[in-house]
Image (cartoon, rainbow, N blue to C red; front, side, top):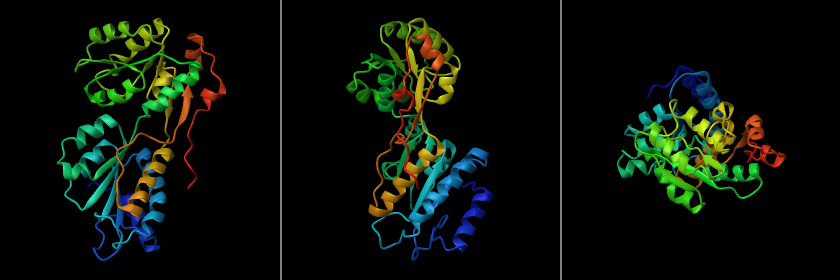
Length: 300
């Protein structure tokens, strides 16, 4: 693994202070350990890892071999590159992926043998579709007709979205402009377009065209990032670093307690951003219920 120097130093210092968590390869007769696998040495990755390390140390101080766990190390992979590297290892470990989208996670883990894939879970990077649908209802303050465009990478969401009464249209593998324009015309009577992170649908070539089309049809776009809202989407829920890290720490604590990994999951804790200018242009009066729609992470 391409571990960065500052993480090594941090882990050594904590070990010498008697924190009780090992960075990697714990002694078989001693305590279990955890490892933070970063994709790079950027400032944002350092911030993620430093916050995460503080959350994991107390849990792993009591992570001993007499417990029920079948693996000796829990690895947190920060970002897609780290997930690819860790997934390719031969190690006695379980893996929690963080800050990687559900589509990329599934693409990486889907290529692994089942025995290895079962030892990997995730907190996805993008918002939960159900939270996005709730935000749409709060913004419009009435039942809304929602549509979404799914490519091959997001097709796994179709059953749940259909159960939530979302109109689902399939996009071709390459997401050609002409095809997307035709699909947008087919959903012109719906109130909201729910955007999901799929490269076949939302890329630099398509996104501006999608915004123009939905604006012309007086449709709001519920995006999947705060940047999309700043670019012209109506609103989104989003999770900060601390929100994701809290959930990762909860997964680790549950694994320590019972030896089981949960299924991959969307972020549990989030807050909301709304583009007030876009809302006014769509004749939507945004109230505090929508602005304050959130699920705060508990304090450590």
